[in-house]
Length: 375
Image 1 (tube, rainbow, N blue to C red):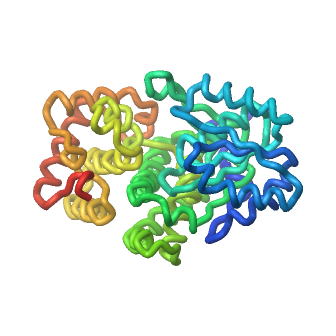
Image 2 (cartoon, rainbow, N blue to C red; image 1 turned 90 degrees about the vertical axis):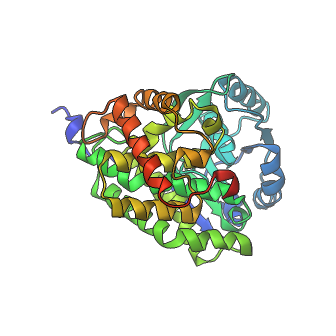
């Protein structure tokens, strides 16, 4: 009997997840269960931050940890250079992918090329990538070339919140923007009977994880951001970190994406917006999705208030970009190229996006706003 893909539910996740202050102390034990020849993939700044703990933990179990330095964008050429270096260090069987987006993506790519196990060590909660099996290649012109996939999710993710609480505030705000959309994009994907990133229908677990993610963000984002000033991870910061790194990662892979992420295809066509963090773009994209969903005004006001409370842009003016006809059409045309558009309750046109953005600009103008540079 052949399987009907439209009837099969699918769910995937990282094999192990560890989070808390001092969690890097677990790295030696975790690595030793996976292999004996680890290699650290990250940039120079992250190496200075993490190598003492990584070296100490692995050395205690009789393992040395060579370092492969990530420089620039994650291109195929750069990754192949790292792979050649790795093969010259006694064929690593465990890759430690450390840092933010670039370090983690580079480590994922190297682990796939080597056929090695993968341990992710994020240094900020800026995005939902650490627990996922996907990564991105860029071309030599700094443009996204392709979204790639590992044969499986990471073997372990170790999140040391004493490290994350020292990361720049802008990175945590970006993580909030990236994670906040997961419930609402997942709802649209489910309504459209879309398949998730594992090629199956949504599970009940995926829906519940999306709800838990959104609730945790709403409750803990503002006090969690306050923990950055204190420089110490409290309960709010721990809950917020779990929502941004673990719950958001599980939610997007197992639910699917929709309009909020489709908007990045257009927003990145505007140079000033392209230079901003992914989570800021997606956070704005979520507001556009709400406009396209024709949400009531009191709901929209609540969303604008929350965005402002955490430092997310509520309009194009928040990116210091004027909402001219040319800018709106450029963004709309780019959004129309996104594959996630099929995960929406009705077909959309570029004119629909333009109207939604114009409506959002008008709504945001009715109360004070702040540019990202001044937030």
